[in-house]
Image (cartoon, rainbow, N blue to C red; front, side, top):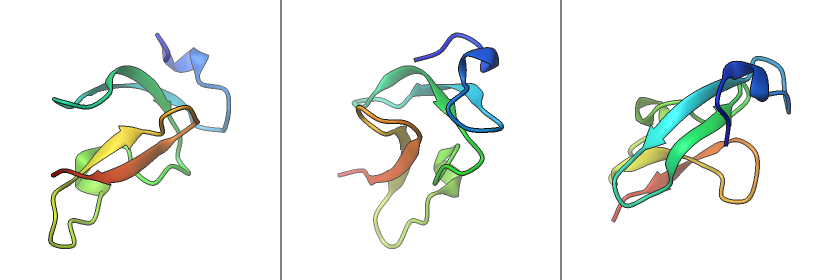
Length: 67
């Protein structure tokens, strides 16, 4: 987690961003320019709704199918 952008130092251009998707991870996480997504709209839908979530136990984000 993070509290401010200055906490995000793993990669360049780190931002502390809120993730409050129902039924998933909630809280603030560092996101970086190289990440797969920063918001849900960055995730290709491909027939199933997808949301942008922090990588569990890692650094960055990923698009996850909502079922």
